Image (cartoon, rainbow, N blue to C red; front, side, top):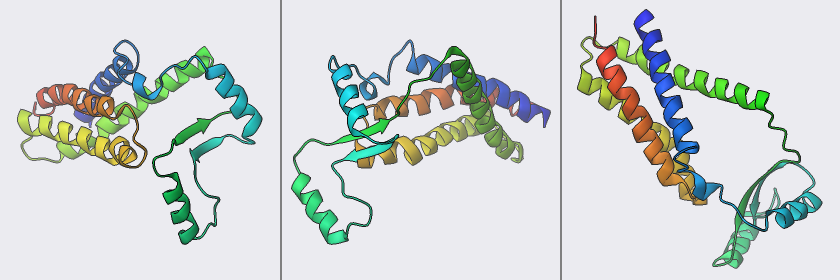
Length: 184
């Protein structure tokens, strides 16, 4: 148990540090959150037009639309612009929120690594290569399940950054766990 906890704390911290670098200094996710000089105009329009917070796919059809009608609308939209909007009425991210979000992200990273450490701890002879590969595969599973499946449908602009995050973050964690977990 102690081995898994130490592995999770250090491994989670390594993944968290990679994610922090990826989203800040390295700015790899910029394509999904780019700047437009028309942001004030767009935000005023959205605020005046959208009644509530939520995620909006434009164009789409109202809930309850028949399959045939939805297909017609889809065909009508072929070759035309579309958008996926995550709209919030207020921006309230204070430094306290930022610190709490960072703390929650760190704990989530440590928990993910602990789950993997628990599995590895059940192996009879975990060697460096097997542990390292298990970490890489975990990163790939996470990437394929969420960002890549989202990309298939919505063409997110930072899918490559998510792949690099999965391989780099879990690869670094794999080097650590490959060293740490086989030790007796």
